[in-house]
Amino acid sequence: MQNYWHDLKPGPNVPDTIHTVVEIPKGSRNKYEFDKRIGAFKLDRVLYSALQYDPFFSSFDAYTDLPPHYLREVEHFFTVYKDLEGTRVEPIGWEHVDVARQHILYAINAYWDMRAGRAIKRT
Image (cartoon, rainbow, N blue to C red):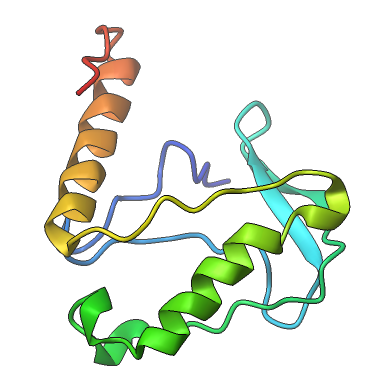
């Protein structure tokens, strides 16, 4: 059995194209989490909010290409999606795609450092 924590390759063209695992199936309120201990996905909780994810990003190169209203919708979504669970999330803004690429590379390197037993350097 494949263990997605250890066996899933980062992607075919890191950091520009990466593999992702979506934890909430489209049209579902079930949120799954990967359990590293058993190497499998398990139901984490049922979402209280009726909000849904609606990705359509493949035709855009940068968040600045998205309609401004859509950016406000996304920010609003992440502000309220845990309200009914008693948790408030505070979005901190948007950054250039190069920042995301740096975070992706950092995370991949930190993972391999952890696997090799090396200390992870925080940046």
